Image (cartoon, rainbow over all chains, first blue to last red; front, side):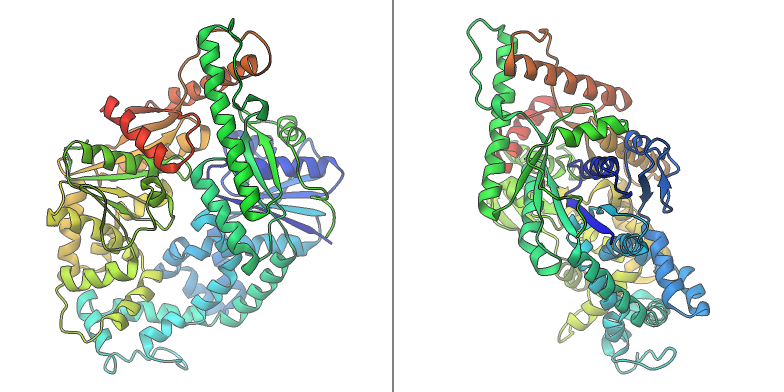
Length: 344
Length: 281
């Protein structure tokens, strides 16, 4: 059975690098490993052996036979919502519809739904022992877990009912006359805009059964996944990590650990430089010592408040650009939870 | 920058955008201006940089002459309909607001125009000397800046069209609006900032932005010596400096802000950054 390892956290904390590094270690331990990533830095993409051609199809690493990588693609998955769950002629209309294209870019849950759908597809495929998922940072990432339900709600026509005044059979019945606010909206927006939106929503609604079934499958897979939260010791990412610990138990599961990335050595904390140390170096170590102390206070505080398992990955100033560099990142990590790569 | 009427602050997630927005607003207040700081996003970041509880739609005076608010889309929409489109006399606006919400899910630019429209309305009403917007990240900022144009294309006539016209005009007026992009001297933020600069250059919606690169360490001349933390921290510092210089070479900022060591709270960070900004402006 394929294990899903979901790596969540705020943007900018090195989540993509940590996901890739975990993938390298899993692959080197003999597990067939797929890393699903979003928007990797150029150096990281080349470390994963995929250069700039990384696409939605898993590609094997040229030097590491157990490692594959693929890129999550939100727009592609929206097309598949249409092609998988709508009649062919409706699907044609949908994928070319201006609102469909806009919704795929704008609906906050859509990127997350797309990512969750693709991740679930690879987990179901059974071709890998472990799938490491670097979750998209949109809306803090928590919506990766709520997206399936939100999508079902969207296509299920909650919004459509506001426009049309009730669940409607068949093609287009736009009850303008019965709804004064729609007449008004019409006068503001011009005659056909709301009509076009309502037509689009009616088409979208035909995908409801498919999307809600799929949503339940995705949620079931999420429920069995192992969740890691990545953060740094800075206030904004910690606030995001706090949200995960507070809200995830309600929607997906409890994280097994929080990883503080870019951690400075604890022994620098409050270090008193010897008197004979050159002044510039003494000032330097005092500054970094204060930073290290701040970081360890942040970790201790987080662990106490959330009863969290805290792991650390050291701050490496120049990011890894090859497999060995990625591997070293995890080898130098402290207190990673046991059994991270073991089968569920 | 602070002599403009609107400063819009964007940047990739994690670069300190909200901290810089809060710092700019505090600095302007110190210079004797009456300032409105607007959180256009949904994170709790801005309020923590001010050291206050969660912000609401109604502006609240968080320091003398510094008011702060958060855009709540449903409230902003109702205000837009009543104030800007002069729709009155409805018993309740909420059904209309819900219809718009449906539209905002599907139609391009509707949700963006409601948010940026509120910001620009506050600029136009002249209740403030300066409005500072903690705007969405660079990944989305284009659709906000372009929203007036997109709306004009979507709704070619009528009241909305006229509103969109002055909004676009306000954004593009270099005497009124200044865009700030916050960056870090790292690969992903620098790549994204450069992409944004290119897009802005091609689209001509606002004057060329000010780039602020945050969290820069200064040069350490002394060679690492001694042992233990003294030596290790010197090696670390020099490695961070070298990496940052590489990315500074790719994108030279207008303003450089230092790495702040050992600061515990978000409000300390914003206060210190406002001192640093004062020194560089």
